[in-house]
Each structure stands twice: as structure tokens, then as C-alpha cells.
Image (cartoon, rainbow, N blue to C red; front, side):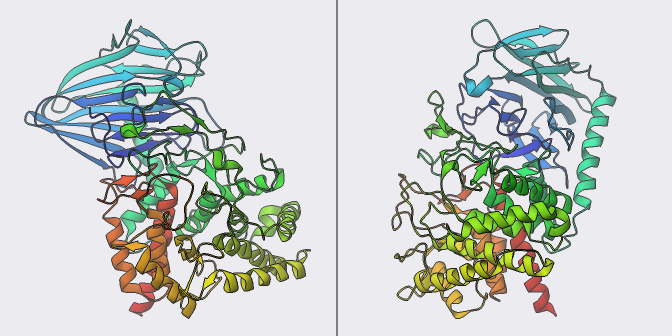
Length: 613
């Protein structure tokens, strides 16, 4: 077991309320339950010694591993090729109820041998509350129960014969291990159950029961992905991204988290280590386009309901109508703290949980939220009159507040600026509101909204455009380029082949693009208040493909897209960034990257189809 496997060296399994990372060595080194944003149970990815893990590995010399997903499912298979035989660990989590939160979650880990003889080793070492809460082991009749005072989510591990769990670990042995040798055709299993303190023990394991759970899980994912209407050139890749977005969505509320993990570095050894286990209004709103584009209407509507509720409730820590992120249940409190006892991934400290950026002013979120709510023409039925009034209150509030400096889309901690992207999305908010008010004949202050929309457009064209750079720039009064502006043609602010836009695209290609990979901006030219550097931003690389396709540069777009796909990991997942030597950096997997992949594929397919005809 390596101390810190590469970030990309993982697959993900989940049950639509939480998820786990499994390394290619068969180690669960990240798992929070009962929700994505709950304290960790296994977090060896952030501290090998203190974080905890659940490993099922194959020991011995000359062991080669391979990892893959069962096609069109969230069932992960880790294969171990040894001189004596070939073994597999099949990991899956049966999907939970879609309409309510549950404290009971199961991770099923099946060991089987397809050739020869293989010796498996099991080690379960939970470390509750980010390694801060001690636990006690109670082992009886093949069931290991981990819990203790002050621990809400207890763990139970049941081994199916021939698995024989034994106490192990430091001190008086509060962890468990096991070892077993299986011959060709034999199988064993270990089921980890998360339950509330005092919850009933899981039922005894049988091969038919395991098989039924496996079949039901596969059937769920086959049925879900069958609803996709995407039949384009990259179907396997798009399907994997769609499943990844689904796995990162908290089913009881429809709110997607930005990523599964917290604290993974944007630069190895650096301080850019954030907690992404929350719902960003921006990221989630932009996912609506991808979901509708694939035909996943229920998922798109679920998030629209969630964001509509946030608008109506007004429950924020900032006093603004919306804040930039929330917990998956809509709780606005995300106090940031540092886990000083964790060394961080490969020594990348500090490790942060919570997110202090939650109280930042980022005006662009209003454009993304309104765009998501008005994406289809069913707003009158979807929101009703009360919902429309709530939307109007937000836009009326924005009339007097859009022209302010803010922290911007990248959550910089270097001071507020008049960010061009923030103005762009405020324009989008008013533009979409005006359209819907007219189409549905709803009462609204359309003249005031129109004046604000047109004022913003003139302001961006005058102050957001640099005659010297011949490009739109990051914020007024600067010459810094910013890849967030790749969305300008996508929201209709400017025509995708307008000369100003094509000049901007050329300037970005010269300065922000490296071998088709795109940097967000240049921190040296625009200090963001943080030390160190970062890799190229995978979201921006896919936005670049989208912009190239819309600009009619279809072959350049296809080349950039196909090249970007080579940076996916072995099971098709992307982290937040790509480092200088092609390694994945930042939290993993990142929803924003996968939704941008989907929208880029849709735009590129459309442009290539047009060229073919």
C-alpha cells in the first residue's frame, strides 16, 4: 500500500447520498458518511497514518493491477494479476432511496478468482471524525462493530466465509484484519455498513444475497443511462461523465457537490487545498444545460427546485439573496477550519474542511441561477406565481447591486475587483428575466431590467475590452486575460464569430493555452492572495473546445477535445487540474469538469454534423 497514490489512481463508487474512492490497489482511502459533507471515516488520502482505510489487496511479488468500470454502471472492478492466478475485487454501493436521506449505507466488496489461486488480505482501520474521535471494536460472530461515545455514524463489517475477521491495530487492537486464499471459481465478500449509533446489525451474507444486490445495482445504472438521448461520437466518454455527475448528486435534494473530496492540492506541497464537498450555485446551475442536453430532465428539474427554494428562503450568512455555496441540504453555514493533525496529501498542508469562500460576494451566481431556472419554457408551471415573484425580487435587488466590485468566479483572496465575468452573468440574469416576462406575460419591471441589461453590455464593451490587447480582460483597468470569459458566446452576450470575440480567442490561445490545455489566468499578472502556482484548469480546457466549435474552428476543436480526453484517468475520471507533466491535481473527481466535457461534446457534435451536411 503506497503512502499516497496519485490522485488520478482511483475509481469512485456511490449510492447517490455519499461515495467512496478506491485506489487501483484496492484501498478505500476516502469515504465520508452518511453524506458527502459528513466527517470522514476513511481519509488515508489526506494522512496515511492517521486518516484510516479499508483495504482488500493481493500480496506477493510481481502483482500487476488493473481497474475498470463495468460498462455503463458505477460498479468498479480492481483486478490483480499474479504469477499464481488472477483475482478481482468488485466494489459497489446499492443506490439508496431517492426521496429521503438515510443513515444506512452499504459498500459491498466481493473477492473472486478467475484463474489459478490468489491470496487476499483485508485490513479495516476506520478513523472517525477526520481521525479525531477514538473508537472501540466489538467483534462477535464474524461481525466487527466500530463505534464509541460521541460517534454518530457507526460502522459494521461482516465477512462472508471463508473471511475470518481478527482484531488488529495499535494499542489494544481496535481494527480488524483477515486473510484468505481462494481458488479459481471461488468468491468471498466483506460488506461495510454505515448506520446510526445503535442501528441493527446487517443481515448475514449469502452468495445469493450478494448476487441479488449486484444485479439490482447493475439494473439501476443500466436503466438510468438508457434514458440518455446522446448518440454522438463520444458516447462511452459522455456516459461515464453523466454517471459521474449522477454519483456526485445528493438524491434527496437534487443538489450536486463540486467534488467528492476535500483538501487535495492544486499544487503538490502548496496551500491551495480546499473543501469541495458542497453545492456551488454556479457549478450546479451550469449542469442544468448538460442534463437537459442528455435528456435527464428529472435531475435538471430537481436542481431547479433546489435553487428556487434557496431564492425563496433567503437564508444566507451574507444577507444577500443567494450565497455562492451551500451544504447539500441547503444549510448556508460552512465554517472553515484547518485539520492541523493531518499532514495533507503528500505533505500538502494545510488541510481545510468547510469553506471560508462561502461568505464571498460573487455576483455572477445570479446569472447562472436565473439561466438555470429559465432554461426551458415551463417556468410558469414549474415555479408558479409565487416562484416568479421570488425571481422578480432577486432581479429587482440586482438592479441596485450589480455594479460593485466582487471576488469573482475564481474565489480569489486578493481583494475585490470589477470582474468582467461577473458583469457578463449579471447581464445574463436580466436578459433571461426579460425574455421570460415577455414570453409568459408576467408582471415585472421590464423597463428597469432592460435598462440595466443594456447598461451592462455597454459597460463591458467599453471597460472590459482592452484595445491594446484586442481582447476582453479579467477585470476593468487590467490587461489580464481570463478563461472564464470563454462562456461569453455560450450565454449569447456576443456572437461566436464576432471580430472582438475571435480576437479574444486568439489572445487566449497565445497566452493561456498550452498544448490545448487552458490556464484560468496568470496569477503572476493578477495576484490572487495565495502562494504558489497551479496547473491547467480542466473545466477551462473543455470550455475552450466549446468556444472553438461555436467559432467554426471545428477541426481545431476536435483535436483539442480528443487530446484533452487522453488526460482522463484509467476509468475516465477527471480531477480539477492537470499538472505540468500530465498528472491530475486538485479535488477528485470534479463535477464541473465532467459537465463541461458533456457540453463540449454536444457543441462539437452539432458543429461537425452541420459540416457533414
